[in-house]
Length: 138
Picture 1 (cartoon, one colour):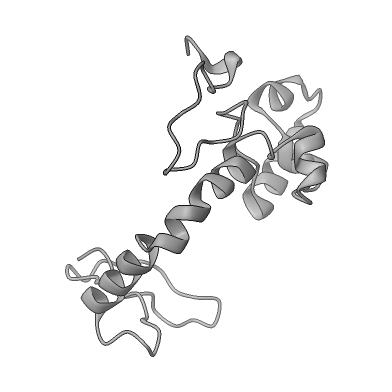
Picture 2 (cartoon, rainbow, N blue to C red; picture 1 turned 60 degrees about the vertical axis):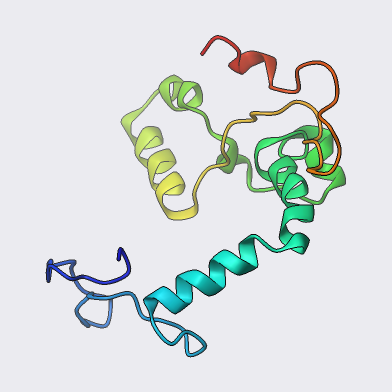
């Protein structure tokens, strides 16, 4: 099980100096296996299945950038949209270091993978390609 450090690996320590070992389970989980089973059931339930296409649109689709993101109230700090090309274009080492630190501490938004709303599971996929054109041929 990946939640248990069965080999006793030295995984470092927390900011309080406590040794990192097994993943600490929430009180509602009786064991790591129980934790995984409950999460699996939750993620496979009808409510999550119904909402998954909307989440995909927010993270990887037409609501992750531009007007779609603005309409969905899904906007982040401009540095969260930095791409590798943006990073390469930075002129000084200080700018690159600051950009890398920002990305490390706060993350960056993933590339857009879908240019149209993701189809619902119950609905057949719309005719035509809904994958972002700039990713075709990568």
